[in-house]
Image (cartoon, rainbow, N blue to C red; front, side, top):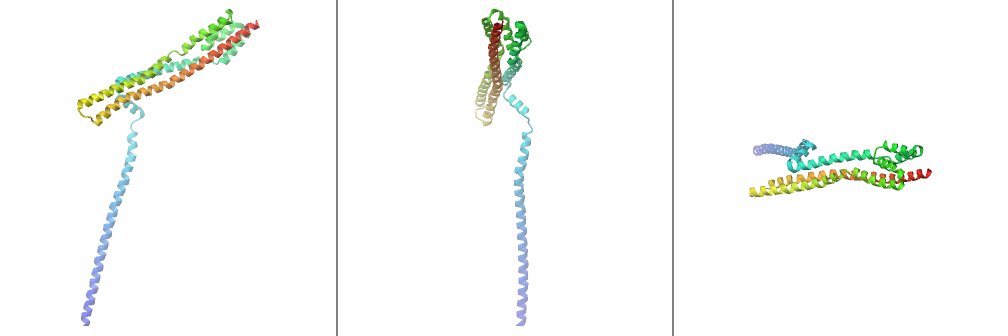
Length: 276
């Protein structure tokens, strides 16, 4: 009986040890599997996180490859040389007239207060001839009007007024010379752009008719090329419009100075005649 009990006890201990060993092996295998799964998931997460970063870093490099000048040149070529060349010619001619007018108007600007003071001093000290010499040595339309008025001063104040008004109209025409051409190019540039757009759309529809199918790439490409002429035409018109408004404002300012100075000249001549 004691031997049987001892045999049962030994068998139980051996079975318990084998069970513990098996459980430990299963637990170790489960831990290894979990670690492997976690590592795989971590690698997938890292790859998913790293992929957008690569895209974010690579995109600016593609955009930075082309400068503004290159993009503008590419779009200009895509628009076609027929109408884009004419629009560019409008811009060149318009800017040439703008530059010439700005230089002329800046040279025509005169300090009327200083000129009136010099003419008044010359009238007091040397008479009309001295005042004419001052006007002859001063540049600008105001000095030219003064000279013409002083040259007719011996015929009376009324003749001076008529001379000033007549010669003032001549000087105003010289100030506004070429401005109408700028307004023409402002109107012509977008009109040429619209014409290029219409002709481009007709070409796109002809391509669709020839292909017998409406392809999105075909339609989009034709419309894009057609609209480029309109964009460039509007840009040219806006650039020239800014300079046109500046020139008109400058001409108005000079004309106002001419009118005020002419009235002041007549008053000076009246005072000079009364002193005699």
